[in-house]
Image (cartoon, rainbow, N blue to C red):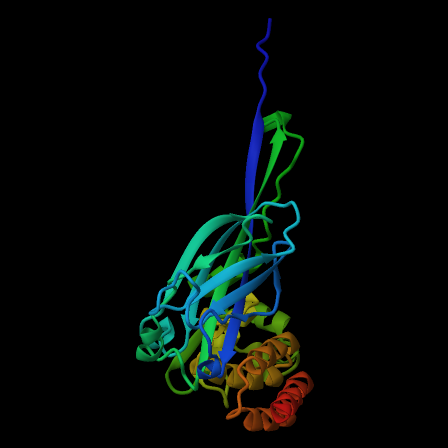
Amino acid sequence: MAANETASTHRLSSTTGVHLLKVAGHSLIKGASTSVESKPFRVGGHDWVVEYYPYGNKNAGEQHTSVFINLENPGEAIVRANYSFCLQGPGSPVTGEKTTVNGSTHDFSAAHKSYGFSKFVRKADLTKWGYLNDDCLLIKCTVEIISSDIFEGHGDDDTSVVVPPSELTRDIGKILDDGLKADMTVKIGWFRRFKVHACVLAARSPVFRAQLCGSMVESRRSSIRVRGICASVFEALLYYMYKDTLPPFMEEATEEATNMAQHLLVAADRYAMERLKLSCESKLSKALDAKTVGFTVDFAERHNCQQLKNCCVKYMARTCEE
């Protein structure tokens, strides 16, 4: 008589989101236990809010700030989440200085919908490490929602076929990183050379498509020279072409990232890459302040960036009302 054999599979998956809370006019916040909240943002099918206490909450003592992540409208659900907080600014890794990161994992529910750090960072360190640049503090919150499914069976008896996420952009990006079967060299200036794949450039940009696949003389050459663009900007352009995302350093709220967004937008406009252009517009819209809004609105006008221009106009109108 055959043994009564059963099996089950427990499968875990995760969804990650990032939110940047900008606290402008930090010195104007007064009063112990006063908090500043972000707008709700959605990760893993749930709404979240970052709550920051410049003078710390009741458990912080006198020397520390506090920060928390709150689950909005939890209902009866129990949500397991990894979360971390990172201060952005001159103290970020991009400039080689100190940054502050705190992370933990908890089960969020109606009974326990707020977790974080009463002693996040010492108030004195905000100034010491240059995080209060122009009286503005930037807090980056990363939330990873962990979900699980359990079902019966395994192997041939499992009626559920698990399909992993698409690896297309990872695989295409890898051929750039490895220089695999590159068939063209792009020359920038006197010294920089980039090994590329003509078919990828043609697929991503109609301008390159006309240049490399049409009747132009470049279509018959194994190398081309690109003028009017610096090597670092072209490198970022290639990164987006192959990986469909901005370079990692552009995710940070730094002057370097903002400057690159401006130059990369010009390149995107030149090569008719509309989604990249809008990504750069979005980056610039999040970096607006009283010092840069005038330049940015003129920049948007010159490069036909209507959405960025609208953001500038709204920012200036809001500033005037204040």
